[in-house]
Image (cartoon, one colour):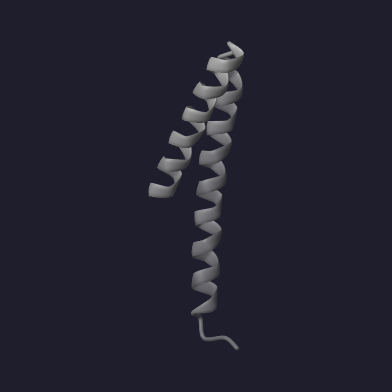
Length: 60
């Protein structure tokens, strides 16, 4: 969860810096990116837990 937090902070800072230099603070792309990051992170965590459970089942 900590990695996701720092990733979101980095995205917001990057959006702010590029928006400052280009004078284009478009929030639509930022919102879409944030939603994609959260969904991707939750799916990745779920897949990681499933693989971990499958590897400890004892089947060889």
